[in-house]
Length: 405
Length: 154
Image (cartoon, rainbow over all chains, first blue to last red; front, side, top):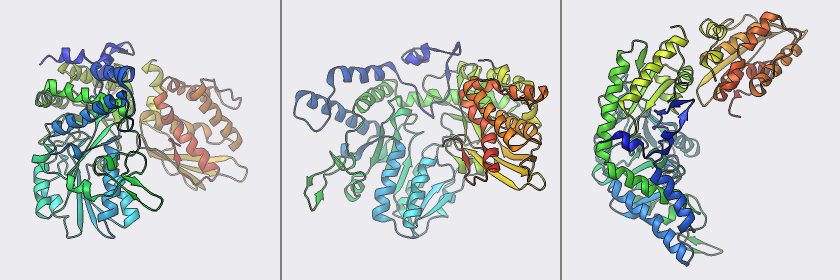
């Protein structure tokens, strides 16, 4: 695989940052966009745009076809059984909120329990907190150990006959831990508990087969998958989408509207109120094609190689502590430098054109557990190379110089 | 934008060895501040006497070199000042970081001016201005008995 060639497909890398070559290590936050995606959006607006699923004119037909094509591509990309199981949202956060609201409305009663983990992003905690406030649900946290692993036992011991949902991340956005989803879902199935997966850090990097995985819900954010902002996907088994009430009300999600009652269509229409991010959804089709042209397994392999190189390099750097040591790690390296706060690290790295994220990465529960207020995080995408890691490492050494460490 | 302007010796020194980082004896006012985007936290303790003079001021908290240094520098400069003067210094400080104005306060000694000016480089790093202003806003909340936690995102 020619990474230089792949990287050349991303216009952002032709720009300099503070006169330096951009070393983008913030893909867990949001990935950069290939030219095909950017062009597709512009092209769609220039030649094919109209609102979808409403009007009868030619443009509306074209736009609707393009829009629905993306749904088919996603269905195949994650190997869902039915295209109706793919619901467009604005991001993974909205996907989780949709389930928390609708599933919560129908199935959660006072004292019912929801199991999440200490690794979760706030997006997979706050919506459940709302349910705790609204319906008296109990949220239980499966513990993670020092390595950043969540064992199957730590989940098993929390399950009671009150457990109504298990919601876990696919890959931790801080420690990079890949969770043992197969084991978790097998366990949940024996107890007939549905499982929601926050796939934000999984979908852009790992091969997905939701039928084989057999999860009930899987959410993702397209902007982390070389796609436009404002688009998310909720995959849900059809039986759930049939049973759950609508989420938001408005145009496009109704069957029949009368003064005394309203009926609703089937999924996905039922869950897609109002005009969606049409151009972005059309553009996202190109992101899927881009990923598939490279091959998701090739992406996983390449990122694994760079992650391992990064781990090796940073472990040799005496001033650096790597956060978490999971057996199975995604393309994420969080770290701290002795005596230098992560914000200061980020500012100094930025001076070298190295873009990382510093802070709690929307994981305050995890940071509190680890006893550190913040970490610096380097996260990878298909465009990263070993050279990027070398520049990161040198820039880390510069932090020590600036701080006279 | 020069890193050296941001990480001046004075700032690094205050960041590593913050002054008045404790709960001061006999404080009669306090307030907390958060930067929810990055997790910086500060708690300012203030002893304001009947003549509205800052008899003592201190802070506790965690954060980056800029936020800790700024809190430390604030306590050094504001200690002993009348509240109205302290408020004027604060306004000048915020103006310096946001608008780039040089502080013009007659009541500051040359030394104090140099110290406060050491933070002027922060202006060139817009993402870091909130780090530098958090403790100062929190001081104001404490002095004015504003019980709301200072939140940089509001």
